Image (cartoon, rainbow, N blue to C red; front, side, top):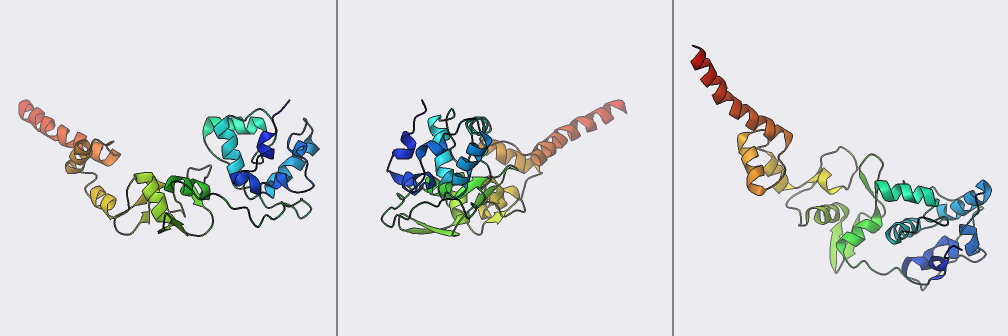
Length: 231
């Protein structure tokens, strides 16, 4: 018998779940192998404001055997658990789909970390970018952050220096697709032996241009020696 306890709980994001609205039985979210019933359950998820939180909770707890969560069947959740790629946001629900009852006194708990605040507002796309949803500024522990600043700080473990720029040409919030003044200054010598030595000194992966420059530098003395020997 499937466990319906995640529907009944009254904490945090569960309070906002569409499947807890008046007139919707918890059993709706546990359809048999029937296309009509499955689509009915998914329609509820499409009208849910916390579908992503529900899906992340299912993945975190290993709930990949029963019911519809985050708009996905168990086998669809297992696929995501293996790939780590979340689906695109659910489409708006049809007008006929029951909407969750308003709960004026229910509030989402504030995030405990900046990383949690970032995770609540972002989704990774199938092609490897990160999309931010909602207001482009947030307040965390009394500090006002722009979305780009949050993305950079969470991904790089430090505050950005100077203006932030994207390297992917997309409206993306993936940390390694963002550069600040320090990163751009460090990358200015990429493609040279100095850049190669900097990578080694910092204990970081050597980029392709620097590897190529170092290989060429090592080859030049050998080539000159070979020419002298041939002469």
